[in-house]
Amino acid sequence: MITPFDEDMIITHLANRGIEAEIDDDGDHRFALAVDGNEELALVVFLGAEGTNDDVLAIRCIGMVSIPPEGFLQVMSACNQWNIERRYPKAALVVSEVATPEADGPQQTAQVHLMCHFPLGAGVTQPLVDDLINETVGGALQFWQWMPDWLQQVASQQAADADSPPDAS
Image 1: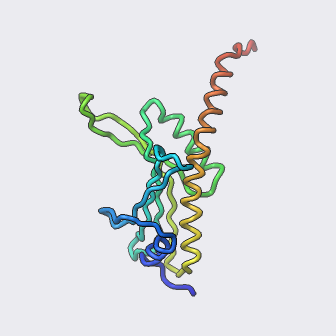
Image 2: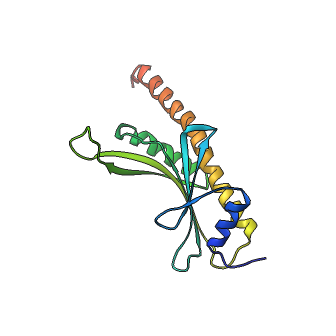
Image 3: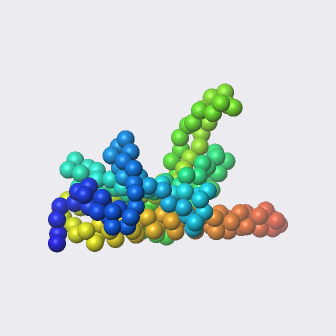
């Protein structure tokens, strides 16, 4: 049955899967997942109803990996490649400044955000909401499985390029 989208559909999704989520300061439902069972690589998922009428399903998945400035370019390139090859979730490198006791001033760090926003004001079914959440979160998990392989391929190509003699044209 098609009904207007609301936060209750998110709550139903979580309850049907036995997921215990916290409510953050923005009202989003937040929970963590381990990527491939690796507790050191956590993916924090935020589910919310946004927009003027709270009729936009917002899904954000943030990898809890701090990326140092020297890795920004490679990770940004990986996000761009992911976005070219896949429809969703979209990946973005989000840079922020953090204060550290060891440094004289704020230091830059970044995290990868994978996200989708689905406008559902015309109405939706619970199974469709479930599919949208499952596919987006599943895609975010796939990103973190794909990312190390992609970075390794780039590093290998760069090493091969550095070892090859310059073109004598």
